[in-house]
Length: 243
Length: 321
Image (cartoon, rainbow over all chains, first blue to last red; front, side):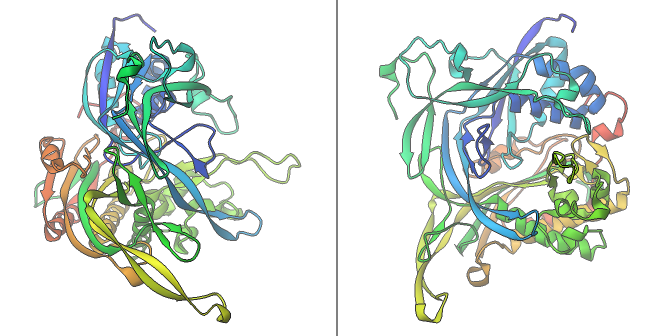
């Protein structure tokens, strides 16, 4: 990749309805939701949208190496409410072809305030990425609708962005920040066919799992739901009282 | 949009406030056999509100769409003909569909093309009795959010109903059913440019423009009916009263996302109207007849656009709009 000056691009998303990005490894029949999408979800969304806008060949040759390698940060919305929902799932038995219905649980999130992404990319690619970020219409599940409201230059406030636990260096006393397993691309040397496997050519998993911490603390429980409020990692503990 | 000719559109969204009275179209289940539980969602403002699942809206749209597609002479696969909710995935056990391809599914079934399907990947059995299968899927082109009641503007009444027990000995049993009323915020997005496409690769696999147009009209007609004649659970005895429909329709004529903004916000129509441009056409409406008129225009005067990736196949596209 040629060396060009880099900039931070900042994209804000309004989440107009409920969203549900499943915690990796949780069962589909009892799925916990993440307050925000993780880095792998963002990279995959950029690839998916890139194919829609620029075509497969261009994404494979030009955008893909950049998308897999670019540093990115995710700042959660100010408030996130998580509620588990009982849904009805239909299952067909392989042998008998009989249909049965079973209750499953899926957590859904409602948010207030924008979800913000920060991407560090070469200046010449800025326009392409502005278009890609503008075109992303959902995170995770297809009905987790999202609408890009603003794209501008801006550096990430790291104390308000989710971070891997291994890099967590908060100066304040540890508070009950939301934490969870999250998926990220395995490494920056992934090739196209690791992510877009060919027929009959199973590839190793392109994702790795890691524990992440969100700058969100639980401030309220309501029935089986809970409300999370964004608080910077560096906020002194006495200032971090629930509102 | 010009009234006199047909124009191409890439994507449409609706941000709506819909008022339903005495409805129970989406429920969380029952508490044993004596209480039907409504669906609830905690909002980020800290209040809990009534909710209706997007699954049920999508299911209702799919059922209506199947009828419209049949009436328009559009093909349906054997699974969709008998309204099997698995769609193309239900065909994989049949020998003639063993080597099912995305081209075959999209071309031969308007419902699988629109509402999507998922044939899961399968590893070969160790004994050699089962063959490996590649994942085959298409995302839905139409997406429904949960409908969320406006806080402070919804109510629930518990109606005491009687029902007959499982056996004669059990006699008559009492059950509480909730009838909910309120104004609900609902968002819908329809990516019409994806009709006839493999949307994983954004490759056109059905290049019959007339058929694409027929499917597009059927999708919009079914959507209009979904909103003007609401359906879902328990409509046999609790058909909702529709008492209002207002919001904004946003049309993207060329490659782009049609913005949606939460109708829980009081200024949602103003905020969306401020986005009006040549590439983002915003049409607010305040009544069901105004909505009907807008939908009629859309059905009669628009066709699904072709995505930029298809128009520029084989070459890099600069994505300019």
